[in-house]
Image (cartoon, rainbow, N blue to C red; front, side):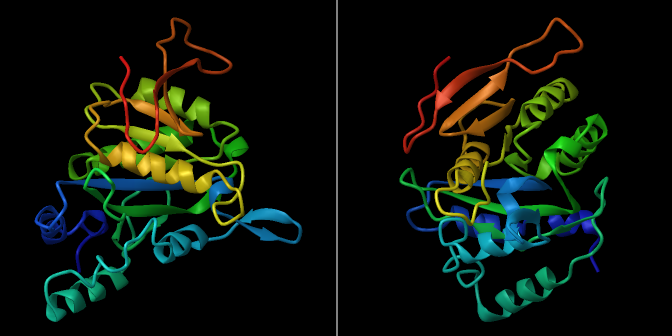
Length: 256
């Protein structure tokens, strides 16, 4: 059996197949680290509560987040699809800092810019409310990203919104010589709820992390905008200061 580290890495054949797809001009690969927050909560007893695998199951069923006609039915031949299916049913213990599981490979539909993103979701067993997140959690996220850094185009962190700016600030100091995008996002309401900002925020973060926009920084995607933290002179700050990088719409414009 493959070890947990290799299990998370996307199938090379799947990535290469995507690159050769008719109408597809570029392919990105993204690792999503789901730490908790409202985005994946489920309504229970008049309140929102974390529910294991609730978010990943939802993403698998939603065409906007998973082009079911592409993965794995478009993958080579029947024998290869069965081999992939068996492999993805195996979920070994991952070498993450905190216990976690990994989703099957998901794929966004082709964008208007003829770009497709393949991604997997690492879901931590203990889904944290953002008010319970401290520096140790952010350090562990950085270590987990480092573990798979060479195997993905970019990274998305799903985080509770209360301390999300603090998490982005901490990670921007932790990472040195970053050459890939690390995008944090979350939502005020669960992604399954009507009028939730979760769908747009997650999809935007995926597109930003998986596309070649040339912004290798820790950023926050929220409400159609991408922001990054300015450098601090003080070691301790109550809240990070962020600057707008770009409005995010169907066509992305980068303002320097």
